[in-house]
Length: 177
Image (cartoon, rainbow, N blue to C red; front, side):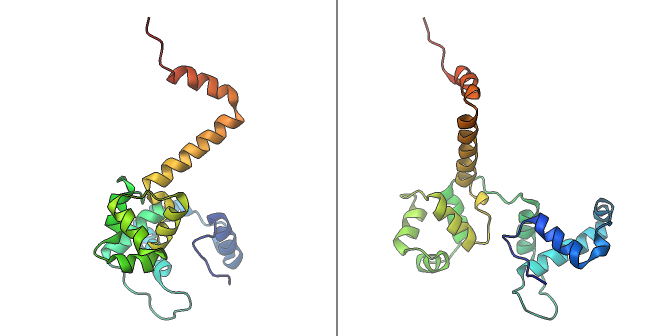
């Protein structure tokens, strides 16, 4: 059976599950998830398996509350920071040294120091790299979400110029006489 990994879309995962476990095809998932005890067991197993290194046999380690809550928020797609990048990065960094952060992320110590000091803003690629090193989706960072939304909006505007006229009229300040 192919290993599940973070980059595999859910539709592909469901295909694999249905292929290997045909009895799940007709399972009423909504009804199953309404059973709080069953839902809790399934979720606990997902979170445990997700944190266990591939190929490790035996019982899964017990999750600490902080890790379980964090993984649950990621699973629900509600794991977002509302703080600016610098504060979010400081929070993720915790009490790690600059050198430890540089090694963890795979970037130069000077860059880590500039990011923590707020004298350097990260580009999208750097945000992705930092997010990956902390096992976060890049959308965890507000700056990534803003860039994504602005990019999608720009694409929409370029593909639909008539929309730009309506929006321009709404946002352009009216001249004062």
